[in-house]
Length: 356
Figure 1 (spheres, rainbow, N blue to C red):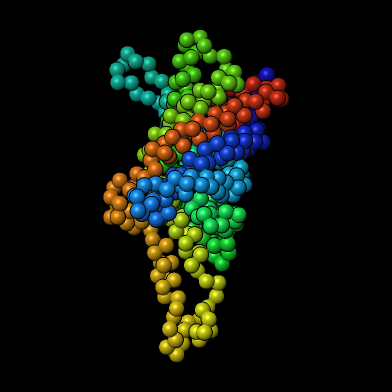
Figure 2: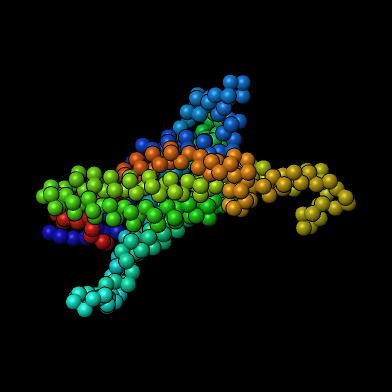
């Protein structure tokens, strides 16, 4: 019996894939965040010997993982539901146009207005905007928790320590939405057309060799290889945006920690909260720090180049490529296999090219 996946199948497959990836590759993501942090030299380099402080760098590699698992499950489900839905809509309503042959002897064949790679890019980009709205707070918490120094407070929970920073300014948790979307949109727009194209070519090649059986394991391996290869290329290309995003999200934590809950003590203020009678404003330094935390992405990028050179924009690129190759391969491999498995439990067969 042939069928198509339900939204529940897609949600469950996407959630399980995200959970698997989080547990496996999270330590690599923590290392990447620490490498890209502006405090890397201060926290992880021994000033006397100028060597890496490995115990500090590799300590607490799973700090902040709880917040990501909680948010990744609904965000990944939302992404795949949106992606499959938009892809189906655009494919179904993609108008055909007559193609004029260059030579009269060639037969005229209709073609679609939107090429398939463009449909994959549009669908993944729109899905990413939905996913980022759910994932941004967890991403901010995660990256700030990854930088918590637990040398002198090993019993304290890094996630709870990070959450306390945002108690007086919870909206700062969404401050990194633009940066996250700015990284993920070009990433997915590059990855998914390459992924879909590689997956189709690998499957076609195996079919021509008479080796394709459409089994669960084979489908997962082909999908994983395609997704991992496409993801690693997209990861390298978008590394500069990822470095800027990391700085913005770490800055959100510093900004919230510095922001006081109310007016300063022993200072006379009027009804609008402004100091009067020439009272000194002790918030000046804090506001200056906040202003630095709210620099634009372009300004942060220029600052990185000025201090670290162009090479600074590519910090963590190799690690990000490896992390993304493993993560994307497992993520989409488990997702596709999960769709087929869930459908097979109902006695249906779902082809890897089926759309919801």
